[in-house]
View 1 (cartoon, helix red, strand yellow):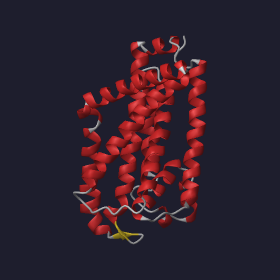
View 2 (cartoon, helix red, strand yellow):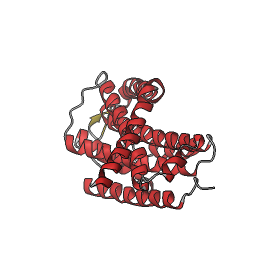
View 3 (tube, one colour):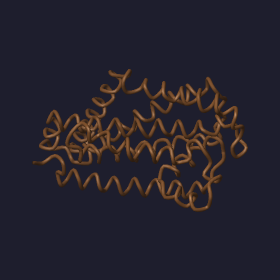
View 4 (cartoon, one colour):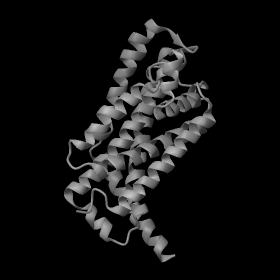
Length: 258
């Protein structure tokens, strides 16, 4: 019982530090994504969207809103964890955590939940901004919350892996720039995968972000390209794989022990 209490205090302490960190510098952690998404709504939703018309029976701006919200969740959840974990490595304060009685799982969840909360907070802010440009009618609120949380969790774990392997500040930008951004743009945010030729539809289904965007879009618009069960299973499997890999990395001391 005592051990449970100590672990709970440790988890809450790490999580509270993460919250204070990104709320204290909100102009760097929260505001940029909100402004960027507002520009997307204006340029793609209003200006270009009026020329495109409809996709799969929905106004173009309505079609892209779920994808843009998901994009903000992904980038912020990832960025929060990779930046925070590497910052602790750089300051060598992470070593104090590893010599403490805290289990590796508590360290992992402390950083990851911080990323989840930032991703969710930004996702909510972007959703509120979208209401200035269109009228959202959420079809499945529970599914929206579930997919948003699972996606933030998945990319928080991915951010932790990047933070573990990063050796310098430049390393924390390589994956977001050359991997995460292309996968996000090619995940069906701005177009319907069903419009692509058969070959490229198959290729799109190899992109995990496609399943997250598709399921999130179903939660809001009630429309999807693949089955919701398939999307949820893919996301959960990826979370299980990344979680196990993160625990192994922390246990082995990869990127931490010298």
